[in-house]
Each structure stands twice: as C-alpha cells, then as structure tokens.
Length: 158
Image 1 (tube, rainbow, N blue to C red):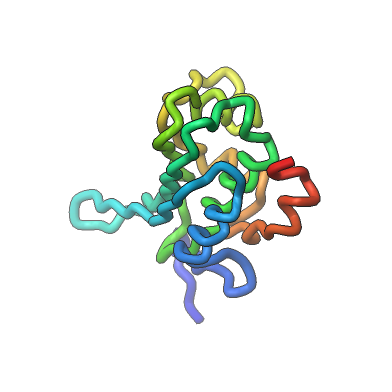
Image 2 (tube, rainbow, N blue to C red):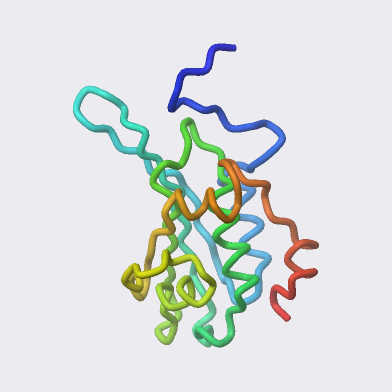
C-alpha cells in the first residue's frame, strides 16, 4: 500500500467510528445525548489536511464543572481523538455542550490539563483541543477508543 505524507490512514487496530464514539459517550454519567462527526474543509483547489473531530454533548441540566470528573473529561477527549476519518485530525478535537447553563467547557479542559500552558481559557460552551497536545498526551491518531471498564477504573462517574 502506498501512503503519501500527510495521508496517514487510520489504523484498523485503533480508533472507532463516529457512531461507536457516540454510543460510548452516551454511557457516561450526565450525558443525555451525543453527536460525533468529522468536519472537513478544503482550501483552494486542494483538499487541505484540516479534519477535526467534533463532539456535541447534551448534558443533564444539573451538570456543573464540579459534577464532571477529570476522568470523564479525559474519556471525552480520548473519544474524539479515536474517531476514524479519511485523513488525520490535524485540527484536533472540538467539544461543545448544550443543556447545562452552569458549565464551562473551557474551565473543564483547563482543569484537566487539555489547555496548553499560557493559552487563554477556551469558550464556555465549546472549545478545541489542539492536535499537538492530543499527540503529546494520547499518542498518534487514532488513539485507542476508551472503554467503559477503563473509565470505571479511573473513577469516571464516581
């Protein structure tokens, strides 16, 4: 198989489909619904390598920054970095939330170490975790999909 630079295929042994990612996210505490997709953009005549996984979570209204654990945030971010796409997720993982007015995605990501040191705190209802930080913490894309057992062992929901 010929692989061109910048066209790294997703490993069959790692990662998951957006549908599988959505099903996993719906098992986490406080998540009423989840949407997972891959955004692709083109620049000029080229299809630029600018994929981004996008996770939109509808949370239970009582969700706050205090009720969501660092382990749950890590599982959500890892889920995004594990999503298969036609090209590497060079633009990282976007996370957005609905339904929880007292929650700040940016503050959750900052608390969990997903905001690069010195960077401004991302937005309240959405934020992007850069690919460089994802590679540093989770390894090359696609990451292994988190499992319910892995989440339980790291105290997700507990």
